[in-house]
Length: 489
Image (tube, rainbow, N blue to C red; front, side, top):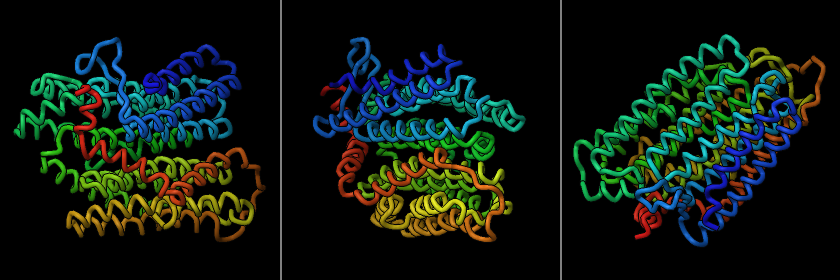
């Protein structure tokens, strides 16, 4: 049973290679991609069940025991993210079958998505800090190809910027890992945590923590390191934008969460710094979302807001806030994907992404309108939808730390997030009736409807989900459980 934890990495890797050989057979590529993802979802569910029953699962590759070999680790936090990632990618692929133009689709599109999945899931699953870098690079190389696919002027310009930023970030990542290795003499993450507790608090560890914050902050797009993200994401077609918005920044958020809780729990300064940066990120995200009338930009800046909210919960670092952050992270991956895909449907109907050019779609497309409305309420944190529970716990965790001002800012950010998406709803669906011919949007709309229903279920059945989220938070709050599972102590 333990070998299951490697399969979510192996399956997309093999599928990606196979799809290269069937490049001209588009139907077969689509079928293989869907089958691969359905298998990965089933395996992720089995892993979650195994972790809940028997605790954290590990796999030492090449028969080298930890900390000397490469270790794959699946705790509940990792397993939930692996499951959510596969769900998100499945529905993006289902949307792409209708929503991606044939020229882009024929240039190894489905194969590259599988390799992107390898990088993302590998980052969530690795127990080795250097292999975290390796999986980051797999993810980034795949994202370079997806971003430039189609070769339009804006894509080429933004891809160059995106590559330059990530080359610098990757070089800094390697240097930071080298500094950390010089201090603790190991790359295994559980062993690093153990060694750091022996070394104790020192100035060099604080510097390393700040460097990790810079590296992962660039990936996660926190203030002031988000400058590359609005333009780069804007250039991507909708299915790719949905993938990027749901996954890429979340890998940065995961990495900050994992390393800070595992390595730097005793360095209060770094959590205070993260607290300040997360609040500024929320404020800037809210301002951007309200300021623009462009559908894509409104949602891109809402990514920033969500990153800030999740990391504020991590910075508060108590049981309530960590549970809230994990819940909100899973919610945001699902609902952001749904909203980006819904925006894609609106753009297909109207031929525009400017609010000023669209109005009155409600009568012609009621299913689209009310699906968007429910998704908007969930993003804004309206009860009983999934966005409410995570944000409520994050705010409650801030209150427990007597951080009232920041907690209230997080709470009030929900109103502005709701305002930004309701601005889309009011402009797009109300007003003078849409005069152009209606088109069938069932195949475009179905993936979003299912994702919104899943988000609704996360809110409605939160009591059933809570034990899993609580178990995920436990491995972050008590790193000794992670260490014991990996090092077999």
